[in-house]
Amino acid sequence: MIRFAKVDTKENYLEAFWRWIELLELDDYSAALDALFWDKPSGWTASQLKEQITTFFGGEDPWTVVIPNDRLINVINGSCEFQPPRTDDRRGWFMAQIPLTTKPGDPKDDEIPLMGLASSFFVREIDGQYVLEHEIFHV
Image 1 (cartoon, one colour):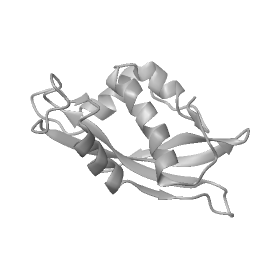
Image 2 (cartoon, rainbow, N blue to C red; image 1 turned 90 degrees about the vertical axis):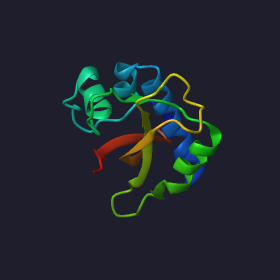
Image 3 (cartoon, helix red, strand yellow; image 1 turned 45 degrees about the vertical axis):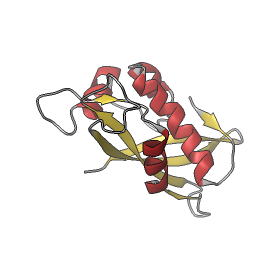
Image 4 (spheres, one colour; image 1 turned 30 degrees about the horizontal axis):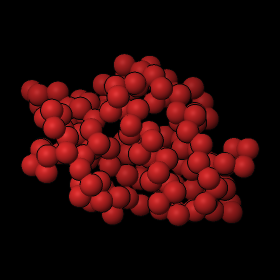
């Protein structure tokens, strides 16, 4: 499970998110499932998670998670949203775009077709650190 410092900043939440994206980019969906907190069993297998992410936009060409160039990472980071934990349920909330392309050969190319799959997470404290709990993929 990805654990990160109990610091309520956008940058801290993003650091955990990009660690999760690295697992997806490596095609390690089993580790990606294990990297998240699940209040209840996820109901997804690694292959089902991969299918949810890589077929979300449809089309003939398969979609692949990539870590794009710094400019595009900054666009993704700039559009993310977060809310620190509230006192009523003590959970925070975070949403960012999973970067997907149909041309993964050179993910640093600024001209690759890139789509962002909006994904939201609850942020929970466990043993003095934060963890990400998947909420939903957004249309």
